[in-house]
Length: 548
Ligand code: ME8
Image 1 (tube, rainbow, N blue to C red):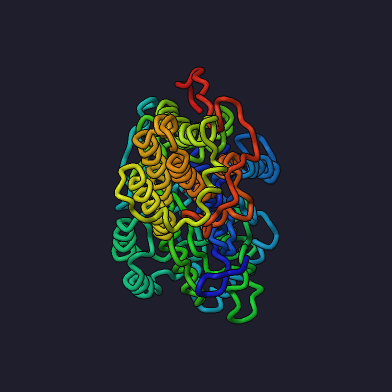
Image 2 (cartoon, rainbow, N blue to C red):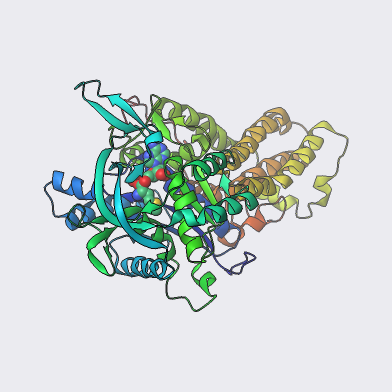
C-alpha cells in the first residue's frame, strides 16, 4: 500500500499510553479498540497507516505502587506493561509499536526536546507551591478544588472537583515551562481549527481553561521526591514531570529527533488522530500543543476524546476497583463480540454504563439474529444457491432498473441503498464517529432481514418458473452480506473474515473498493463450513450478572 493522504505520509493514529500502576480494564480496551478501528479503516481503504499504543511508566503514582507491592520499580513496570501488551494482542490491536516510556530512544527524545525548550528560553527555575494530585499526576489551581469527606473514615481532605481524587500540598524548587508565553498562539490555533476536537463541545472547555486558568507549568520534581523518571539533562537533582515525558512518546514513535529538516512526515508526523479519554483532555489539548508550538513542530491534526464506561453510573476506575477484566470478558463473550459492543454501544460524548445483560441483548439482536440469521437465510437452504444467484447476474445493469413488479422493485431499491452504504460509513469514519459507522452497517443488516421477510423467497421458490426471481432476491441479500462483511473487517476482524469465508469472497476482493453492489461475480461458494449455529451461536447464559 502507498500513502495517499494529501501530505504524503502514513495515517498516524495513537491510543493513550497507560499507567502501569494496575492491571488493564475494559476502559483501556475501549481506547485501544477505537484507535485500532481507525487504523484498520485506513488500511481497508488502501492507505498506509500506523498505530501506536503503550505504557506510561514513570512518575510518583507508579513509584508508589511499586513500593506498595514491595517490588523493584522496573520489575514492577515490566510485569504490568506485559499485561497491557497481552491485552493489545488479545483484542487484536494492529499496532506498529508498543511504546514503553522506559525505552532508551524515548528517553533520548525527551532529553532532546527539553534542551531545545531551554535553548529557546522557555524553561526557568523557581520555587513552586501548590496542590498536587498523585492519582492524576498534576497540579490543580485552588479554583478547581473542593473539600470532601471520606464516607467510611470520616477524614476530610482536599480533592480535585473534576476527578474527585485527593491532592497534597507541595513546596519545592523545580523547573517551569513558560506556557503562558504561548497563550495567544494557542487561542489563535483553536480559533482557526474549530473542528480540532471531536466531540465539538469539548473545545469550549479547552478554550475556557486557556483563557482563564493558563499558568506556567511545573515540569520537574526534585529527585529526593521523585526518582523514578527521566533526569533533567543538565541537572541530575531533578526528574522530568511525567506528563511531559509521556506526551513526547507520540513523537518518539515518528523518529524524533532524527529527522532531516522538513522531513518529519517520513515517520508519520504529525499525528492524524490522538484517541484519548475525556479525563486527559487538558494534557492533550493544551500542554501538548503548547510544547509543540514552542518548538515550531507541526501539531496533531485531530483529537478524538471519548467518554467513559461506567459501572452502575460510576466511572470504572482502578482506584475505585469497580472494573471489568477485559480478558475474562473476551473469554466469556468472544473477542469480536467485545469489540462490537465497545464500539457500537460505547460513548463519545456521553458515558455508557457497562452491563453483561445489555451486552447479551445487543449480541442477540445484531449478531446472532442480525448477521447470523441473515447469513443462514442466504447460504443454508437447499432450495437455492448463492453461487447460482451470483452467476446468473453477471451483467448487473438490468438489476438496477425498475420492472414495475413489487418484488423486483424492492430488490432494485435495496441495491440502490446498498450502493450508498460504503460512502455513508466512510463519512462517519472521517468524522471520527466509529460508533455511528457501525450502527449504519448494522442498520443495513436489519433492513436486509426485513427485505427478505417481505420478499419471501421460500414462497416464491414454490411457484412455477420462479428461478430467476429467487436468484434475484438471494443475490440482493447476498450482496448486502458481502458488502457488510467487507466494511465490518476493521470492527470485527475475525468474525468479518469468517462471514466472508462463508460467502466465499476471495481475499483480494475484500477491499473498500469492492464494497459496492455487483462488482464481484466470483463469490458464492463457501470456503468454510460451520455448525448449525453458524458464526454467531447463541450465548452461553451462565452467570451473566457477574463482573466481566
Ligand atoms: O491517563 N472508560 O493513563 P491511564 C473509558 N498515562 N476509558 C477509560 C476508562 C473508562 N472507565 N478508564 C480509563 C493516563 N480509560 C496517562 C495517559 S497519554 C500520553 C498518557 C482510558 O492508565 C481513557 O482513554 O490512567 C483514559 O484517558 C486512559 O484510559 C487513561 O489511562
